[in-house]
Image 1 (cartoon, helix red, strand yellow):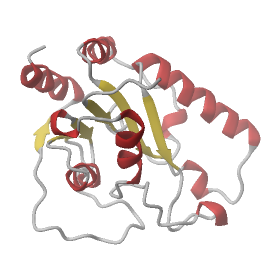
Image 2 (cartoon, helix red, strand yellow; image 1 turned 180 degrees about the vertical axis):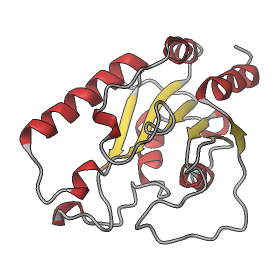
Image 3 (cartoon, one colour; image 1 turned 45 degrees about the vertical axis):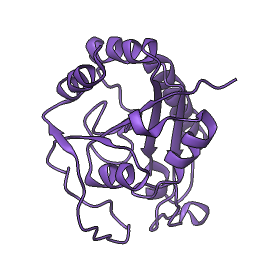
Image 4 (tube, helix red, strand yellow; image 1 turned 135 degrees about the horizontal axis):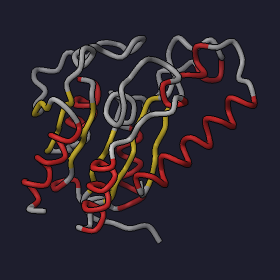
Length: 195
């Protein structure tokens, strides 16, 4: 049976490690022990940890190669285990993918909210007490459109860039708080929930 309750939705590339472009997830990232411990604290407080990510590494190649697919799947499994994610939702689609079956404007690709809504439905998430952490304005827009009240943007040089290939949305406003790094954002969440 799936756990339920409020959730912390966490983007991967650019949030848990630097985003160096498609395929960054396959690199050996140094993960700070503090962030891993904090994820366990939130889990112990009843917050589900949900990974939400766009992963387009295969979209930039003319065909998928089995060794790379297997390495990628092992890496995802490792990330789920390290961070004790309750679920990880990954969208591989990209409107400009070179691989036809991945060429799509998928509703699960952020800023679309398909993956977030799927997580809400599967886990019966209390969205009113939930958070989303990401490094792109598209993460914040997805969180806002899904009704997540607490949106935390981790600043980097690409934070205000729109995802390549996505139609530009021009909302009247997007509300979020900004942080210099993941540790600062996690400490802020601790203060809000009284951990």
